[in-house]
Image 1 (cartoon, each protein chain N blue to C red):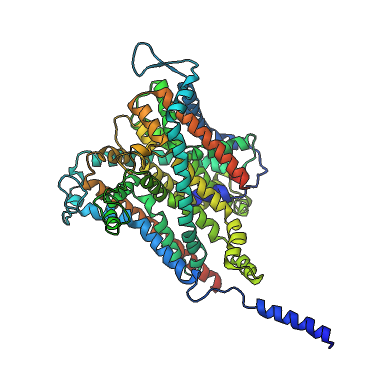
Image 2: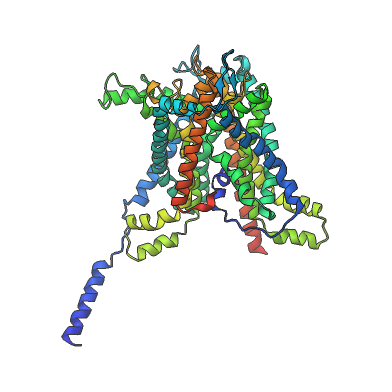
Length: 294
Length: 303
């Protein structure tokens, strides 16, 4: 080895040594402690107003439900004592169910057509479905209200249902389309090979496979409809939904019964979501075990 | 469940199918007709309403006309509120992104080893969807009120003057907007980060890139679809929102947004042309911003 060679080698060795400690996270590094800690705090922050709402549903409120006056179950036991809360809640449920059913049916049909068929004006169709999601609610609400005004239609529960179906429709299309696109066409082919008529193939193969997506879309529609305030307020006229009730009550103080209804809906929704997740997880595990055994 | 709806449009690469059939028409027609009747026609009737003039005889009645001046009048009268809405929406979007990204990264990437934890955390992120957002905003109003815990503590620490307010200020409105739209930001971020291939990050580390460099040149570009749909899902509704800014909630007279102006013109003053003109302006500005933004960020398949 010449002196020159060893010098070159020495230099390369030296450079490698200088570089070799690769960037590695330390014991108290960002990823190890700071990020989990931050995530925990962030989730707590997100939950603060929810916990507040639930806690104040147990408040022994006299006139306003702002300061804490002691624990009671009375609000939960006598929800409908407060005039208007239950009626508004009933309206919300009715509107939510009808709008969800109509939007889910129409939206699923569009989603299947978009994922399965070739047709002209495809780009225009996609745009027409995307635009309502990109339009601020206040514009959707004012637009429909202006139309009802011009057409001389009286505002009421019907106009609210029409409005809710409209904005839920796009969300249904997007949700179900993802499911149709992920569907294996071979399954339907197998159905046809076994002499299934188109109707049979759809009812016995396609529809059951799409069902989880359709149900998810329906749940999403319902929760969008149930919580919508802005569009509803423009088109509701004299009738009240749960959100418009809260808005009008906000000036004089929200009764604790409103907290009760919101908390009950919240707990029910969480139970549904968590149990579907657990069911999905156990099913995945069972399938995994079955495929290992076979 | 809700996750697919918010990100489906951004992530599903569409392969145009081959089949042509009259069935497609039957499937499409009812839904599209519905959207035309109750989405497109209302936009047209907004445009027509914005050009109307007040009737000479009765208050709250308007006659068909071609009165362009309404647009000039509302812009000069409510220019501040229009600019303010977009400023607040921009601030809320930036804050929501800064807040959500680390959280979504933790849930989507770090928590992969524990699927149960991951599932639980995502349920907690979407939990605010299940409780009325008006009540959540009112809860913040009570928590942050002048005699509440937070303001009291800030005053005791002299971080806030004795006469200081939080509710009713622009800060409170931006805070409320940020809070209310965090789930909309977090979900799309989570769905893209959840599919992030960590081998890219390892490769970057193997090539001697520091954590910051890896984040900037690998993680961010790979999660761009999530960032784009999250920012859109926050910015658009935030610009048109009027609940947070209304004085019964977190706003005050100095924080009125365009949504409040549209609402009061339409439902209180019965000045339909002004409300319609403002709606058209809001819609037009948003469409311009969205199309420029989507083009610039290179995620055209969103549309």
